[in-house]
Every structure is written in C-alpha cells, then in structure tokens.
Image 1 (cartoon, rainbow, N blue to C red):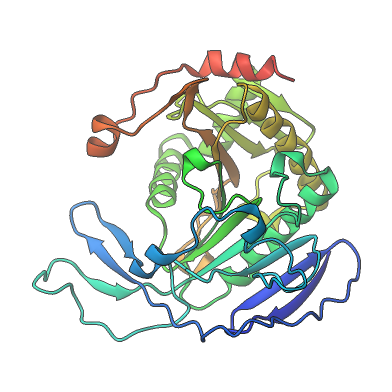
Image 2: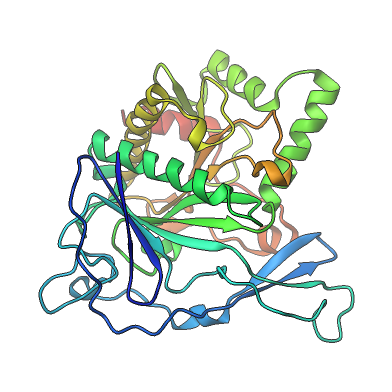
Length: 361
C-alpha cells in the first residue's frame, strides 16, 4: 500500500491509497470557501446517550446524476472532490460532516434544560471511495482492490484513534437508495466519535459481565458455538466465518468474525486481511443474488473503543452486514415496536436466511 496526502482548496485533507507508487500531484482548482461547519451533541438523561445535531447537512448533495457525481475523478471542465483523473482508493474529509474537527465554546447545557448537558460535536468524518468506477460496487471489486480498502480502513483507524478526544472509530458503508444513500458512487464513511457509541458500550458491558460469570470470552464462545452447529454458517475460510446470528434483528443479517481475536482493524495481519476480502466479497455476492435486484445493505465494523476510552481486552473485531429487505418487493420498516420501544420484531428466521444464502454459493 502506498499513501499520498494532499489538501483540497478549502483546507480539507485527501489521502490516496495505491497498489504501486503513483504521482498524485493534481491540484484542486475549485474556489471553495474554507470549511467552517460546526455541530453539537446533547446528552439524553433518560437513555444515557449522546445525540448529535448537524443542521448544516440539510444542504448536502442529494442523488446527483452520474455526470455530476462529486466522487468521480476530475475531468477537463469538471472538478470534483477528487482532483486526480483516476484513483485506486481515495479518502477525504467530508464536506458536510456530522462531526466537526473544531471545538466551539458552548453553554454547559441546552437552553432551559439543566439535565441535558451540551457539548460541541467534535470529531472527524471521512468519505472512503472504493473505486473511481461510478458504475461499480464493493461486491464487484477484485480481491486485490478489496484488500486495499481493508488496508485503508486500518490505516485510518490507527490515525484517527490516536487523535486527542476520540473514543471510537466507526468504518461503515450504506449501500442502495432504499438505505438512504445520497451519492450512488461506490463509497463508505468513517466516523471518529468523541464518545463510545451506545451499541459498543452495551456489548462491552455484556462481555465484561460474561467474563465475570462464565470466565470466557463472549464473542469467542458465540463463534465457537456457530462453527460447531453450522446451522447458521453462510460461508467460511481458514481465517473467518460468516454466519447469521441466532439473535438476528434484521431480515438478512450476517456477521463476519476472524478466528483469531483482534480488537480492531489495525490488529489484522496480512493473512486475516486477505481472507476477509475474499469472504466478504463472497457474502456480498450472495446479497446481490438473493433477489432480482441487489439488496440494499449497511456494512458496519464493530471495533473496540480507543485505549483512552477504556478499550476492553475481551473485544473481538467483527463486521455486521445487514439489509432492510425482507422479500423481493418488501422492506422492513422500523415501526412502532422497533422505533418506539427498541424491540425488534423479525419477519424472517435466522436458520432459513442462512440456508437461503448458503444455497447461493
């Protein structure tokens, strides 16, 4: 992997990741104002969770036609977020970030709400472009390119985790218009949070309780049980197993676990990275073929909090891949029970879903 750093015209950073040494010296010719977005977060005293407010995102680019895509390479007469005429993988600071790289002076709590602490929305949001080909997708990358994306995720995780004030790094992809993507170009995102996300905090707490009561690793014992049963295993190789969790919430959900425990992406060695790329492409291909049209999905890396946030030694890195499609012509909506009470009601069962995906191999 070869990394090249450059700066866009408004001061944001862009980083190119290439398979081989490549000159990356194209300048951003746009006359953009200096980025000055600010967001804030407010603490929900009932749930014990932070809520982020980023009203400037209302004006972000929304589903432009292909010939106006801001993630495609720049061409003569049309400058995009990527100044180069081609690229392998490119990562840049989001122009419309949910979190701001700057601190702000704010009152200690929301106006008239002394039980709702108020803080700035400090953090960093990045866009990860998987390929310069607008009409491609992650599922259609070759293994070498997919591995380069894994390396970019790991590199960004290591750097962002070292930033002062960052408690968790979240790499993810939203894929498909039904999921809510605003740009069709193959890309994902990275959020560097100033707090530990509720999901990770809850899982870390459960893992600690399990260690105390059972003396084992919760993640590892789940993996061993799924490997032994095989009923919900979708695919596997020498380093990773992909299975439908027996407690799946989403209509189609697969989790990918490495056989050897690491807490985050930088901890993966070469063999694990290669094997993940191969297995992930396999599973994404099954998601594409399950129905007549490729399923929309969210791919979410579950990494440990950063060391300064009290990372657990039991944490086991894993990928959660899930779709809201429950049938060829039906989507799963988070209605009253899910949205109102957080209680998921599933329209599918894990064993049937696993069998369906296995049959698509």
